[in-house]
Length: 81
Image 1 (tube, rainbow, N blue to C red):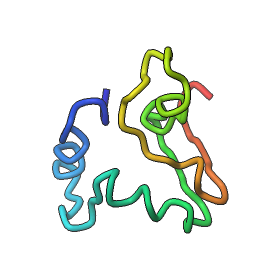
Image 2 (cartoon, rainbow, N blue to C red):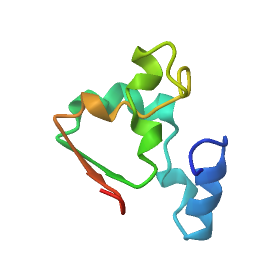
Image 3 (cartoon, one colour):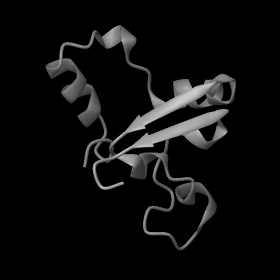
């Protein structure tokens, strides 16, 4: 569910002690994604699904996503994979 509710990840990161000024919003980081050599996604990979932007009848259509597919390489790490 993390990432689906606005601000939820910020709360989790704050609880983990991550300084707020290290955290970027999607609209801040997405324009820079194509300059990234590697993007590592750990869990919650639905917020990185390009179908949200590309497939109109997709259940997550219109959901804001991190555009990790624009990075040169993307590595997904998820328990079920």
